Length: 239
Image: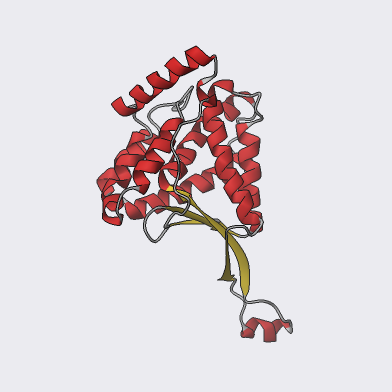
């Protein structure tokens, strides 16, 4: 079963599941966000979501964390059924920085809307259902970390503006990731809700960054999502 828990230092969310849980989520996201020729004005968001999918795929290959989780089997069942069976299943997990994970959760709403409009609006579509499950476990994990009033604001803003990330300067997610990494554990507890809201409200810092990127894009004739940000992540992250 797919699950998400906050990491020990509140640095990010740890996404965990067996191989098929993670593989189903990855394939559902691939289906809904479409190939690189679709939804061009959402390419920045699409690329960031694909970055999270890459981390999930690495997890399924055992390149991140491997855990053993009780599966409900015990000696009584073995004797009753006259079988020998493992009592634990192999689970894979990977950590994603909280601003990145929140952005991914929010941006998937845009792609769900696009998919419903252009591909399939069946409310029982299995790909959408899988993504909604992922979004629900992210938000439930956030509920455990945020004060009630902050969480209520987050949920309200999550559905009040659509689309959120049309031609979005996704370099701002890097800015928030790096700002968040510099905070202490106590500062993260106090400010996680504010970071979530900053991903949904185009504040002065975001507008200034986007204006700068657009000016560069006009000179270089690049698209906004093609311009890298000159900021380096630390080689080691304490989760």
